[in-house]
Image (tube, rainbow, N blue to C red; front, side, top):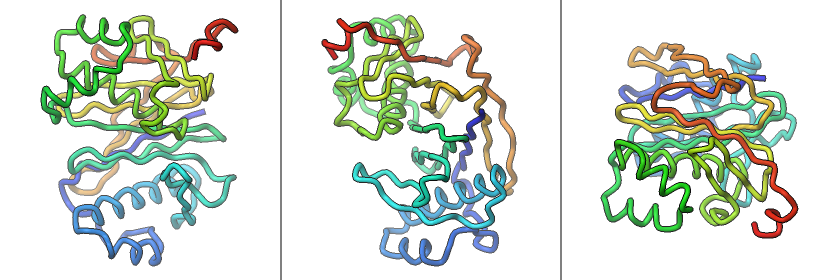
Length: 249
């Protein structure tokens, strides 16, 4: 089973002549400010193009919003997806075959030191120890934050569920009291940190980018079973907690 992550760098507007987004979605975006409208429509266009490439569906199916504020397809038989924004960049993660997806992206060094201190104050001792062991403190903080956000998007908890999630980055493990079976992969690039949280049955993550000429460029395929996927990457898989551990979650 594969999942697909595509991102658009926001370097040129997506062509309105090729939009596969229904008119009612375009109309619903008219009430948004310009920047939000552009990102909103870009995300849904990326999702529509992914559905065409993976499933042959030529127009974006109807969407609804969950109680947690997360968009999803109205038809429960259609795949799960997750949307993320970072600066002018837009990303969409699409899961296949009943899997779940959670995506987060963050600009490296976009947060002040005060904000970073706020982000780290509730982290576990293991997370803080891993961060302090890295050469680039700011990048490491961003990686842990991005990992957490992507997993909470998958579980549907947003930031309110932070207490249900424990990360053990040095051991490559994670534990969620809501979804016991999760895996996540995070990579730090020169500008962007991204994290994809996925169901354990996902074997491959296909990475794509839309360039300034609006061409789809394959970046690489990540084999999720490989423990070492890159020098600045993290891959975490879920632990199976003991009955004693469950009682303390």
